[in-house]
Length: 92
Image 1 (cartoon, rainbow, N blue to C red):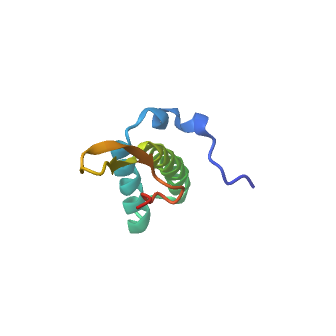
Image 2: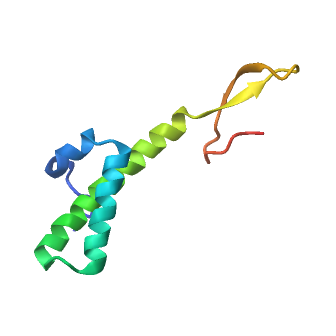
């Protein structure tokens, strides 16, 4: 059984901001935790939740790749930037 959700079923997710996707994902988790939905709908919203989680993960990784540590010169003024390491930590 393929555990990956086909993205074509959830094409609208690709255009979502991180905040919007996370909010919808939280709503889905709430519904599933409360058991407010029938089995078929649970499966459908669970699959959408997986797609939302994957989208949020991609957006976070892209943001982390853009984050850089400012480096300071001997006089304390900004001298440039250094990229974060692979674990997301600034090399100090």
